[in-house]
Image (spheres, helix red, strand yellow):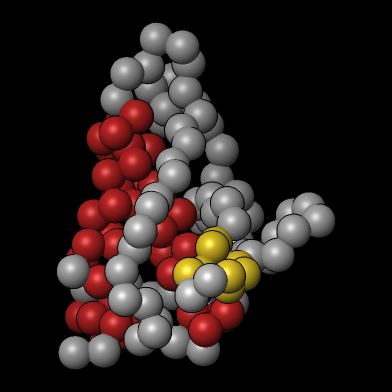
Length: 123
């Protein structure tokens, strides 16, 4: 099954276009047969960035949901650069950052929202 069909099967929809970079960088660049995707973040239905500290302003469940939304934007950036998602052979590395207070310890659980999405789409 192709990846876009898989995304639809999961009940998900990618944005028409990935959110544009907010500074002087490109969303994705190929080098040495690898695709490097710049930092992404979660956006709401209106396309605006979602804010809030995990464990303070948003609970663990919402923070994890937002990491999944970040993954959706990441997939959109890949699609926009490559034309589709079929050229992706594997995800080599995912770097996740969580806005959280110093005593927050559940960063891996939050980032799993994105990791699980990538596993569902790419296997």
